[in-house]
Amino acid sequence: MYTQALNTAEADDRGLEDAAKAAQFQARIDAEERIEPNDWMPAAYRKTLTRQISQHAHSEIVGMLPEGNWITRAPTLRRKAALLAKVQDECGHGLYLYAAAETLGSSREELVDAMLAGKAKYSSIFNYPTLTWADIGTIGWLVDGAAIMNQIPLCRCSYGPYARAMIRVCKEESFHQRQGYEIMLTLCRGSDEQKAMAQDALNRWWWPVLMMFGPPDSASQHSDASTKWKIKRFSNDELRQKFVDATVPQAQYLGLTIPDPGMTQDADGHWRYSEIDWTEFKQVLAGNGPCNRDRIAARRKAHDEGAWVREAAAAYAAKRQHRQTAQAAE
Amino acid sequence: MPVANIQVSETPLVLYTLRRADDALILGHRLSEWCGHAPMLEEDMALSNIALDLLGQARELYTYAARVEGKDNDEDKFAYLRDVRQYRNLLLVEQPNGDFAQTLVRQFFYSAFADLYWRAMMTSCDTTLAAIAAKSEKESAYHLRHSSEWIIRLGDGTEESHARTQGAIDHLWAFTGEMFAVDDGERGLIDAGIAIDPATLRDRWLKTLSRVVSEATLTLPQNNWMQQGGRVGRHSEHLGHLLSELQSMQRTFPGLTW
Image (cartoon, rainbow over all chains, first blue to last red; front, side):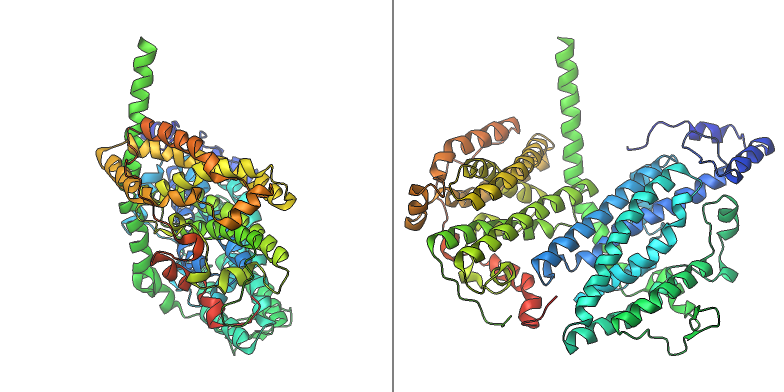
């Protein structure tokens, strides 16, 4: 068990969600105060955050797989070290986020079990395969770029532990994003084969990356409450537009073509993208993406094959504790 | 970069440096295979960390070997454009990860040696090797602590973990002798004060092993037959597969910048 002893469950049991407490809670949120683990909070706020933070943690951990796929094949020793360090960072983010989720009263084991059982989601983007080295550059540039766009506002999220975790995560993500762009730049300044590899990767990742921001505002289920609680500060479509506006000039600088022939720039300078194929998004979300089964299978395999190691560590810790107690009694 | 294997002028110092660089690269590569697949997230972090340290050591040693050789080679050419017969690492470090016990026993055998080795090399009259040793010693001390703690936990954990760890010790033991062997070229470097004689480390290495293994309620094998060949490029079948993966990009797309 990793759960810290917090007085949360007790508070829920007593059913203290009376109107006065709820109003006081909302007043604190409106005053931009941070909510901390031991503070009173509505059950729905706790549930929403547990879901969001644990999904975020699962995404970091599952996200290690597509990039990890290239650690043993990175083309130079410098790239190999940078990629390994990057994937290690993602693991650190996962750990950090599970710890933040635990402050809301769920253990890491419970959360991980839900993911392994297919009950908890992780970011759909990691259900796409990394086929070439250019995919590693593209993930850094676009996937981490989109993640930063989503996460910068979360540094001001009303829940203190999540907001603080995001500050650190964003710093590292922004380093990863620059690293990814630098891989793309190297490819685009390289041979025709390398440029083609870069363009092909952009073609495959562009639309899935736009889907990372979630369904259009007209169809989003969670936004209203999350906005009121200042967990979410910008809508899916607002963030998506910000990302597109930031990314188009970067693609132009690389000499790559965004795979959206219908894209136009409006009078205000915004790049207007074509209709997103939400059928694909729903399919991937429903478990039918190219790698959904592989990703979960890989995580289950690591978990199952590691069971004897975790049992051994627990058995040893218990023996040691027992010996220390016996020694103290002598 | 051409697709063909590079030629290396293996003077005693170049060869000596390449052997240590290859140890670090191959072991680091093996550890990096765990990233994303370890028994717990803390070990994904720890094994990646150790892999990064080893990769860093390999890069410094390759760069130095290239400087000493004074030709057109560099760290990437050494890593990506030599085939199995040109690799000079210990057989121990190329052994497959197996289960977590096998990975940790391999690490423990190597780190218990590397910790003593790098500490001793800090007195090398070759200032570059002495500087690399000073950095590597700090890292190895942590690697040894990490693997020792796991050997004790696994050995004294459950019946299953005990059996797996004892099995790994018995399996990998025959690959430890190579760490203490010296050829004529290395003998010359030892006499010149550039290298240290690894045979002088064996008693202390064995003492560390015995202490940890006994606390772990495990035993060291009595069998003293030792496999050799890695230092002269006679490897196990495992290394070729590792290299085919490691080198795939440079072999497929020769001569490009990445």
